[in-house]
Length: 278
Image (tube, rainbow, N blue to C red; front, side, top):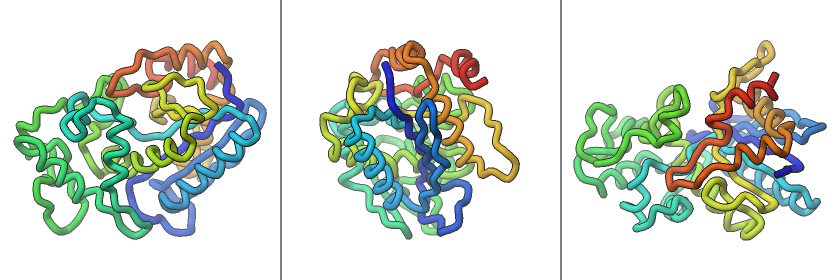
């Protein structure tokens, strides 16, 4: 399987990060086997969503196939989606969040929404970490306060990826839960915008002009240049690496049996990726 280009995106669950490029923000990078653009700083999700949509539309119009890697989990541990939507289909869950997330550059409702979701489950949890000063019903500030919600702490992919955090932690160093909540609406809108031209791996057959896939940038060691922002270096490194993969290697990566919990692109193939990475 071949792609003409690769777009890698480091997402964020936080608010607008201002005009000056900085860490813990949204960064993106597009690369081909022979050319790599510099990483792009995108100060908030609204600007990022527009830029990603425009970039993919341009590539699609040019007849190019694009692999798009988002550094956020595409699904939750088994049982979560069914409890909320009546289905294990994670793509329905994306639509569920898209209908309920309230987002602007200055504020969003991810903590309140997590509390509302927790209220639908028995016990306390599964989400935790309240980043606001005010208390939120059903949302504990500490993970140790949770009990009886009935869901696993991690997906199989999270358990297999060294250092991966539980998707239930909403914020804090290394946390990914807030990124997922604030990422699902963008992913859902990309599906709506591009329709049959877009597929989501591993839930759908990746034979469309645009393929979305979950990534985890910590799978490979990072070698940033001095004074380089880590997030910028990661999207640049991953875009270059996956753009240079031989077709047989890409086929190997995408040959993964779909599960409702999803999977991380490249997980289980670290040795092969390191060989290409050099």
